[in-house]
Amino acid sequence: MKNILAIGGSNSNKSINKKLADYTALMFENATVQFYDLSKNDIPIFSIQLEEVIGMPELVMDFVKLMDDADFLVVSLAENNGNLNVGFKNLLDWTSRIKGRKTFADKPMLLMATSPGARGGSTVLEIAEKSFKRLGADIKSTFSLPSFEENFDDAKGITNPTLLADLELIVKQLN
Image (cartoon, rainbow, N blue to C red; front, side, top):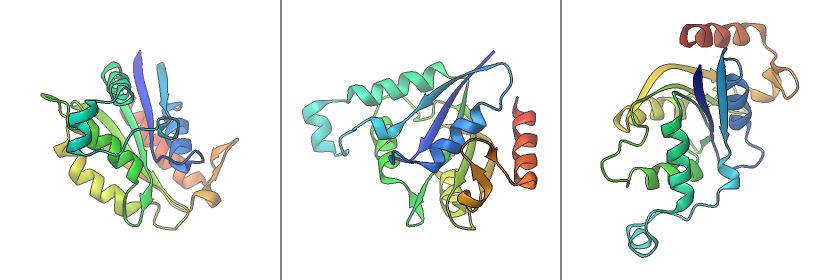
C-alpha cells in the first residue's frame, strides 16, 4: 500500500490547487491519503532573526513528519504573479532550514498546477520543476489543468474528457 500526501501549494482556504491535489491523490489505487491544508496552519514569516528567537515552528515539523511518513507526494501549486504562493514558499523556506535535510527528502512527486486562466499555472510549474529538484524532489511527472472553473466540478472532478484521460494515464503510470 502506498501512503500519499496531497499538498495544495496555496494558503487560500478556497484553494483550487488543494482541490486538484486532493482529487488526484484519491485517484491512486490501494493508497492511503493524507491531506495537508496550508490555510489551517498559521506559520510565521521566515527570517533568520525569527528563527534565532523561536527556533523551528512546531507546525513546520508537523509538515515534515507528514512528508516523511509519505511514500509519494502529490503537489499542486498556485501561481501568484508568476511565482509560488507566498504561504507555500514560506513553508519551503522554513523546511529548508532543517539541518541535514533536503526539503522534499528525495520523495517521488507528481507536480501539478492549476489556475483560472488558460495557461493553468504553467509558469509556476516551470519554476518549480527547476527549483524543487534542487530541494530534493524526485519529480516523476507533471500536469497542468487550465481554466479550472471550466474544467473542474467539485462533485465530479475534472470534467474535460481529454484532460481527465491525460491525468488518468499519468496516475496509472505512477501507481
